[in-house]
Length: 474
Ligand SMILES: Nc1nc2c(ncn2[C@@H]2O[C@H](COP(=O)(O)OP(=O)(O)O)[C@@H](O)[C@H]2O)c(=O)[nH]1
Ligand SMILES: [Mg+2]
Image 1 (tube, protein in one colour):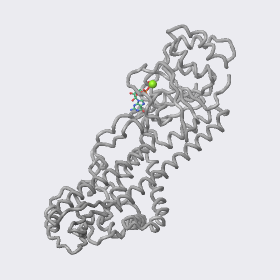
Image 2 (cartoon, rainbow, N blue to C red):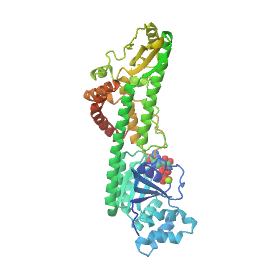
Image 3 (cartoon, protein in one colour):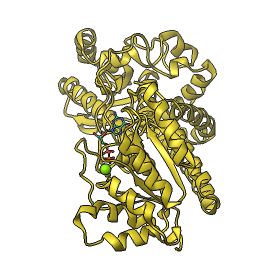
Image 4 (cartoon, rainbow, N blue to C red):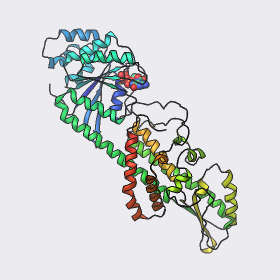
């Protein structure tokens, strides 16, 4: 029997134990069908793991056993060379519909695949499980048992499983298919290395490629976030109007456009981060109470995220009275009393917290008496730190979200107090970002280029830490 050119593992087990979930999580493929109804898989399906378009590892999802007792009897009585056992079993049963699942699940084994046996560690061990483990032991193929712990397992069941599985498998691992982090996935792959010495060098390469790929995603996420921040910092919208009386209306329109633009920029950046982590089909939903679900310009987002006044001041934020009425009106020979009146009117009761007072509004005279109204760039760092915090929370969620997990997170009470990460950073880090924001606001490209490595370093370390958290931020 020749081994496949690419390390290949058949994922076997009783229906509904979590085989498809393990495959989905390990291959980061959210198109793998996961179902609460047992027996949906009747034919093998191949799930390649590709990095940079190259297939480096392959899992085969299989149907569960149908006839474990009879299969075990047949295998126990088999007299030929062990390497031929799987092929001989298929040849002997291929026309018998009662064994259609077994002939199907033996086919990757006949072609030299290793075995990953998945059991549901949250239920008690039964006789039929022992039979299935014995079947796999008799094949003599390299094999590992994965005890899918699910979230609510019972310790006494797990002990029974571990004890029994050790008798039949070279390696036994606990793995929570729906909650595994990247580090736990890599751990499982490390274990696969030990079940078959022949694949050890190739799996070593696979693991190195995985780690490298993960680092690449973090680096790309850093760029996406920095680009979002720089883009938002320098953003300006403008329009013209006929005369002074129309200026307040134009300005209000522009402020709405400004906010919509920033919201769109944020959304695009978050979607890009989601794609980096290969969540293609299912929108990773954050818990309902997550601050990222709140409107970017809501009072709540501004209250819960971002920095306190003193932190902003210490970071050297532009504009002294950060949330004060410091609308900067660069007048070009026009009196703009109307502006002040409108500003005062909306300022107090506006639901759009902070926002109105947070960016510059300018009016310039144009030839023929027309006026140019300009809104932006943002005057305070608050909005930018809020964008940064929201991106960090979102990143923490998608980088930790197992691909087999399709249901939204449970409703939980909203955590109290400030949830932002940047407010817990060292002041020196915030200062670097404040410098970066100031450079972006002024379109000072040389300063931006000089600050990028520092801010990218801070952000990269933060993302690394977040991606290693078992429980994501909300
Ligand atoms: N909560 C939880 N449910 C799981 C886990 N693994 C599988 N399930 C659920 O168990 C059922 C069967 O899972 P699936 O992966 O399709 O099992 P398969 O039939 O062995 O391929 C589905 O409803 C899954 O959502 C897990 O780790 N945690
Ligand atoms: Mg399945």
